[in-house]
Figure (cartoon, rainbow, N blue to C red):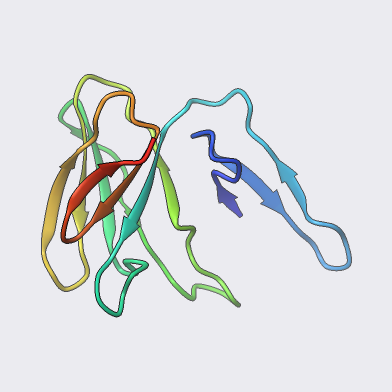
Length: 124
């Protein structure tokens, strides 16, 4: 699993194998990003099916999608990490079945939530 396990804005890795203990590898030297928690509405609070494209200084980055069930008992983590070095950063979110939105990321934000109804809220 690849995720920000300790909430420091760096992507960490957890590995497991049968009949062995899981191992967590905390990233202590990588680039710090902004943690993005997306919240859907109605019967889809995890925003499954949403796609997110980072835009930094006018250039689009790679698209990420929120998936559920791509393997046994699997789902994407609630928080995704995006690297937003640059003067102007935003996220283009395509919500499943209800259009899209362009959400500006405030400079210095460490964790934000994005909701279909209320936009961006800085958590930290």
